[in-house]
Image (cartoon, rainbow, N blue to C red):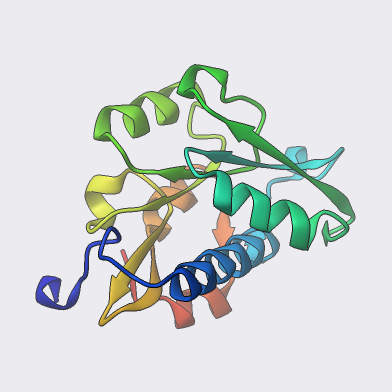
Length: 165
């Protein structure tokens, strides 16, 4: 399986990069919609945080600002520094450093659905993880971690996932 995985930093055209960013935005929005959130998460605005990738933030902000998750208005927040991260239902993190993911998980006390991009779901520390398989964007789900944190993942997401643990 790992021989088919491609590094996210492979040189690609600007059009291909834009398509990847758009597709990640679509997936992130669907993750937000298709996770069954505990009752305490269904009040107020639905906050989606982005750490370390301004392009994803711009894509989500321009495409999904007027959308809802359930009856909640979506608000997007961009974070330059992990110490700024707070109050997110869902957080996308570009994996620059494994220690950052661990620190984010600890500071958020497992109360946020974490989406990452890494070659290995288990080591990513997240509930959803983007990977590239034969140059195509796929996602993995750590359903065990999600359920331990009180989140339930819709069967549609599970069926479409590249892998689930």
